[in-house]
Length: 184
Image (cartoon, rainbow, N blue to C red; front, side, top):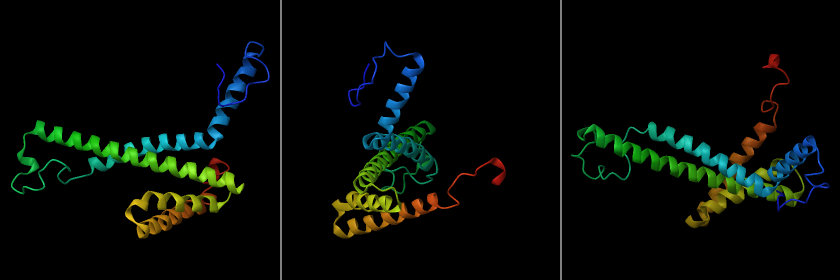
């Protein structure tokens, strides 16, 4: 089956050998992955998975009363006074809610940032540190715009600074992988 988003191959699949079909499939996969929508989708999915793990970890480290249980308003009612089964039910519901929330937020931010960065890189036709800085500013400002102009400005500055710091580190000597196992 031919991908409708990519140009057709020079030969039909019936005319190709198995190796040519494999090369053509690998080329199509790389073309999709290298496109801006492909990068944005991959970053969104990766961010969703990473956010899910982060949410599970953070929920397991929460020693306070779970949010949304109504136990915060009544100081006489404590979590440890509840039966074990009810405690576990509340904790697992809270863990699921936190995991989903973190996964959704990480995925959304990853997708927006990667899409904007790819768009900026395509527009500027350069691959340098400023692409991430510009994308960080646009992403941070865009995510905070509903809270007002001051929040958008701080979101822009914060995201741009964080993105720049990560890019500087990844492009530095310390960010490169070692050439062999002995130079660590």
